[in-house]
Image 1 (cartoon, rainbow, N blue to C red):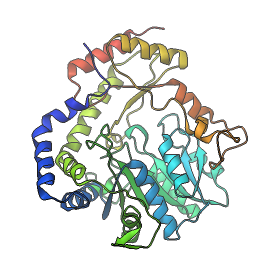
Image 2 (image 1 turned 30 degrees about the vertical axis):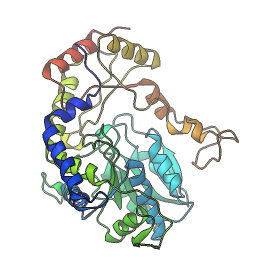
Image 3 (image 1 turned 180 degrees about the vertical axis):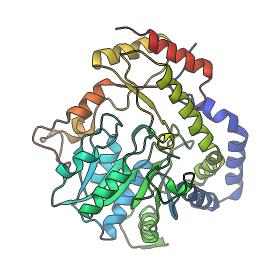
Amino acid sequence: MKIPFLDLKQVNAPYMDALKDAASAVVESGWYIRGSYCERFEKEFAAYSGFAHGVGVGNGLDALTLMLRASVELGRLKLGDEIIVPANTYIATVLAVNAAGLVPVLVEPDERTFNIDPQRLADACTEKTRGILAVHLYGRLADMKAIGEFARTRDLLVFEDAAQSHGARFNACAEMPADSKSAEAGMKSAAVAYSFYPTKNLGALGDAGMVLTDDAELARVVRMLGNYGSEQKYVNRYRGVNSRLDEIQAAFLLAKLPHLDAWNERRREIAARYVREVHNPLVRLPEIPADPREHVWHVFTVRTPDRRVRDALQKYLEARGIGTLIFYPIPPHLQQAYAAGPEGGAMDVLLPANPKFPIAEKMAETVLSIPVSQVLTDEEVTEIIGALNEFVC
């Protein structure tokens, strides 16, 4: 039995007729940039996520960058301000902070959740700290209650990188009914950035992204920045970029959005089986949050005692026909892009002279993600569980 890590053709196959209809409708409309499908998806995804405003952009990195740039343009941040980010995130989070003219400050993650450790925030703050960019890594919500409470004590802005957490819900929103869509990831933040890269829980058939916010002025500036800095044709208020959600991708996403909750629930079922049925001491399993809705299992990531065991496990699973991936093998501070000295360019991320983030580095050496897509069959899940339990090293 061959089980790929993710088969996008299989993911999209059940919806092929709807996707073809969506593509045909856009082509026949004659309107291909920021038309009715983009407007509808912005409104529907914002409403689904509990926000007043959604602005479609070209991709997830642009969503991160433009929500921060808009905050600078509005005077809520200024160039050179420090923004706290997790040390084990994908490099896009750090790149976006730099691209907005800000300085990323790396903070170690919580080994239990893989997300930024709120207990370490105070030590990372300086007189230049003006914000926190939380990342909901692997689909699990960061502890936004603790992050929000800390931010209020320091008068910091909070932003979110929700590229992996489409549909996750906050348990912390006590003022909301338990099933309220307003308990969506990001409710307590200034803005949230999403990616709809094809592999995401809600994926387009190409690049796509969105900024969600309750702030009408921030949404307006994000929209202008993504349209060459213009709100009125040939009148450019800002030095903007070209980053707009394509009509055809918006139409695809509209066709897929109604299925997102069911897909996430299937991922939770698979994750629960892994946690319940894998008993190999060499395979350290992630925890399921007290409120399962706080995790949508974009990936299911296990850990091993060391890199040697991780590499052996990956090779063993590959031999069994089971696909795996490593999210992420090199943390941002060890990437050549952020290397100190003339060869690596300017050091525009706040690091000590010899940067060491032992938790993030150990995670990079020991994490391995196994299949968890909603299209996995029960038989395939059983095969993966059996393979993990039979692994020896």
